[in-house]
Image (cartoon, rainbow, N blue to C red; front, side, top):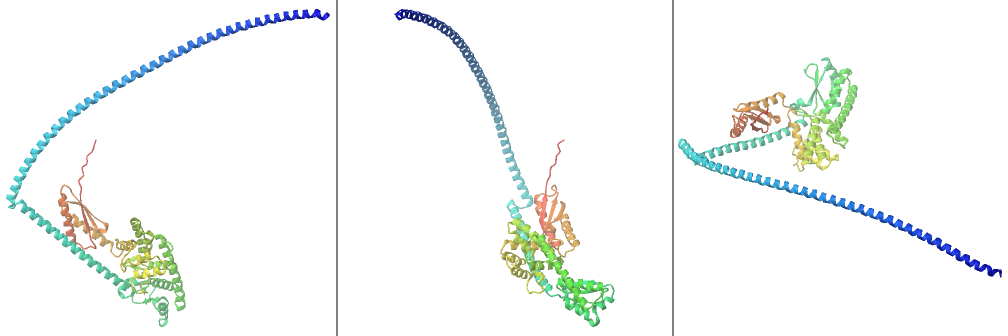
Length: 509
């Protein structure tokens, strides 16, 4: 029963609580609605503010774009205005140029008319002068032309005859030269009296009594010396001197050194002679080897056989027409190397062949035949290439040159042997020959100065341009050639060059 009293109370309490909760929730909902309405109002205000700001920015951008478009339009209008102005100026310039060209064309037409008039007058004067000239000369222009042609033809014939005579003389000179070489080879192999200057050496003595000591008792000392050295000892009336004669320059040098030491030592007997000759021979052989090696080094030639080095060094004691053969070989090698380099030939073949081209002279008195072929055979046996062997054999045309290197070696040999001062031509004679050439050139009128150059192989003549014209310069060259041929003696040929030069000089101040 008591539970029955509590149940209504609970229900009433529940209803009261529910009503309170409803009132509370309603008040909260109304508060949230009011807050939402306030927030919505704030958002509307912010949206309106942003909308106004965007509108303002859009208006400012539109104004900026419009200003830029107006500025660009103004600039384009200015460019168009300037372009119109330039076109107008160009049209004006073209008009002025057209006027100037028209005036110039008028002047040219006037000058052409004047030139035509003057040409007609000149033709008339020419006809009159030609008629007057023919009347005074007593011949027509065709006759004068024929006479001039005959004179030119005669001069050409004279020049051709002189050229033919020059060729014949050169051929005869070449034949004489080859004959002289053959005679020289024979003289070098046979030590006759005609080669005494080339095959003797003199040894000075301290007194005449030394001659008797050199001869020795019953001539045993001199016989021993001659047998050991292979030279002839000539004791004559020459005071305080003894002459040694031998064609082999190496044996002669060994004998000279040995005899000089015997005279200095004073002990002269066969045993001493043999000892000193052996020492002198060792010294000379050492010098020969050193000279050969030095020559190969100077010429830049490597890999030579020791026997070739020895033969090359023996040329130190050999001369040809007064020219030392070892120096000649080195000089020829250097010239050949330079020529081969310029011509695109084999430099090594050219300089090696040129260095060895005269090694046959080192043994030419021992072996029969021309030294070129002897040297080529030696080079072949000692391992030189066929091109080098051929260059050695062909340098005096004992063989026909078949390679450019062979021609270069022969040319370098001729250059080294024929240059002024290389062989026996005195300096005084050489200078006199050059002076004579210049005197012949200076003897003609109109010559200002002349120079003999190229070792006397060319004469350059400078004439005064106001006195000598081009035609006279040509005639002067022929006249100088004719006088040189008539009055001077010279080897080969001489080139005459006449130079006529006009110079105009002014100064800006």
